[in-house]
Image 1 (cartoon, rainbow, N blue to C red):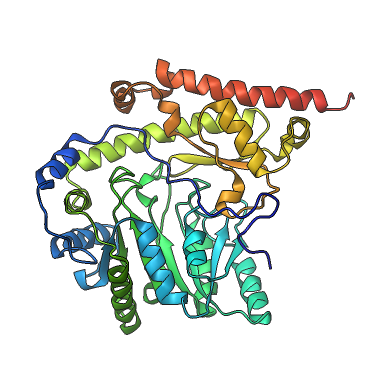
Image 2 (cartoon, rainbow, N blue to C red):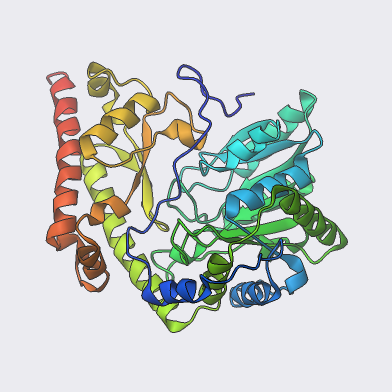
Length: 418
């Protein structure tokens, strides 16, 4: 079975951060942080009662009602996933994740010395494994003496920017629970769906509430990435209560507490007052347009990419351009990352950072770097009817098009005469 460490360039131990929105901090959030800046008291592990109540309201508005005793807060989703992995699979169990998956999932299993097995995703979306491939992977791992016990997935996905259809999610969740797997659903990007009225997004916790923990990093849609805060929702079962208690024990051992100013901002954001919801809606609209423009550019050059439906990123496959890339010394994802990062002047992390094959010529392209300009110019993009036509974004898109057009032209020169 192929595990997470790629060959050739050595193991990838640290992935790129979550794609930020590239925008200045919402003034109302900054004011909340400033008002709490003189608080010297430590937040309790797992979050103060007021923060937990706000998280309950957040999830109840998304058809996932819960009580404060089923919530844990931490300084970012990685800390929560580490605690959950230790609690669910720290005693010899194996972890399953999609291929590709968020760059920060696998490292926390490796910290605990646990094997991670990647399961292919279907062609139309990422984040949720193909149910038949999942069953086959579970069978093979068990045949080799393994003990698969935990599946991490995401309906709104990083790195592919896609949203898994409900029917696929239902089949995968049913297959996983039939095999006795516990699920962690990373729903960091659920509030960044580009077409919320035309996209059906369901949580696995709605389908199988007794075996799913939901984790949301607030950097997805509510807080700046530099203010680490995340919340986890546990099942209302005896096992869920035991798991919640165990996670709090691990967070305590790690000293994983929210800073008081960040906790205040998290509480304010989770309550979703108008300034937060209005900024979020404007940010989603902006990045949806930039993602659509970037998608059109890379596919016009001959690359492949699933149409992005959520988040601030897309996943481009330059496999069709392999021959001209090889002529430039690019034969794998690491070399492609280095080439595109240099030419674009923006990060283009390769497929290997997301558990994909090192040989796959795929990269994640974020939309925030396309904003360019000063803080004022980036803020202007929020209200522009066609932000991709503003000088600061248009220039970035021209650069993107130029780099990919050069690759397309190289590919055409490689085509044999007819």
